[in-house]
Image 1 (tube, rainbow, N blue to C red):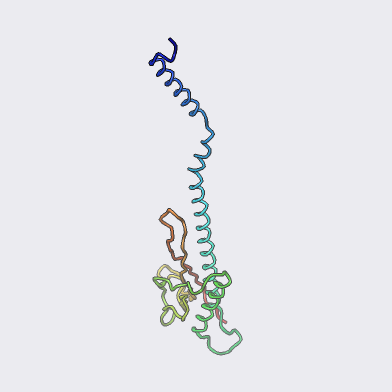
Image 2 (cartoon, rainbow, N blue to C red; image 1 turned 90 degrees about the vertical axis):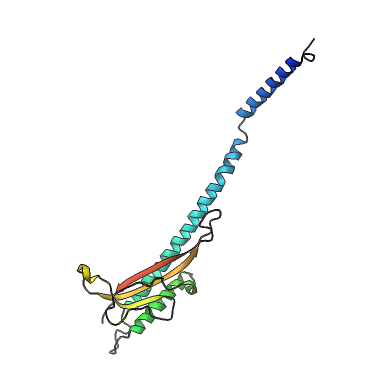
Length: 194
């Protein structure tokens, strides 16, 4: 009587074959790399997207900050250094707004997306009131005190340029996906005299 007629021996041989095949499959790592790549690649892709979009936000923040600085610098310089007439504050504000718009355009940013800051910055006026002026979407305040007099600072008058610019993230499967944030740019410069 051979192996074929003994059912117990047959079952034992089948269990042994299954065990041998299981050990071979466990020691075989041919598909492990694919499984590891399938687990790691989506995470790496999300990290690369995050680096890209945060880099974009940082680039736009740098451009709008530079635009605010250029606007404040243009608003602080005298309108007409050789003229004998009075310097008009509205012309200072127009110069600041135009310089800011030009800097945004040079950075390939849409000036129509710029918005008034919310809330508007609060400064102590050197003369009169210091509300945001101009018809543009840039808040130009002048003349405002740049130093805090209560802490012993000197009463220096200057120009403040403030605005905010929207930025929208695109990070799928995260809470930041299609989330709109507002990057705020602000610059203050001491006003120059003739």
